[in-house]
Image (cartoon, rainbow, N blue to C red; front, side, top):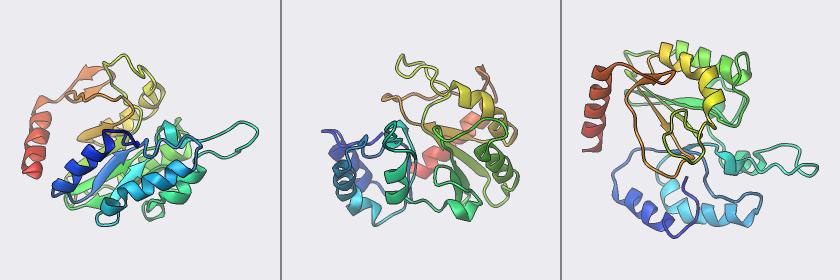
Length: 215
């Protein structure tokens, strides 16, 4: 959740000072909320960074921008301004897609696209995960906006329906880590499934991998 607040400039400064390869942003970009000039100002704000290295994003609730009786289709500005390479991963929607980085396959999910069992996103995710080559990309990462696990009182339970529908797909594919946004607080958990803690060794390997990558 980047937005355009007094904290945004310091966040961008920290990003600029890091030697990152790609920025992953799980939704809530401009906070335009139908006020279109904020999309313009956000674009100008992040352009020095987003024009030099890849910014891969997925949508949050502030990108929906659907007004009853006025705007029939949500995400109109988001889809027009932040077009991701979804077709390359055989997705039919800009709201969910995947791509590869060296040794990592990254899945960008849509918390506000249809995710029920049998939906287009669900079937796409099934096929995408089935085609992951863990020899070439041994690490498998997923991003979404509304967290499935959250001990904060804010937005409690908002990702539960998606968790119920899709969590088993990620678990069966041995996804290593899931990053989420929405809640404006930092939190992390060990591996989990239906609120149960799982493989501690894989969690330690992940922490070691992330520490090496950051260094």
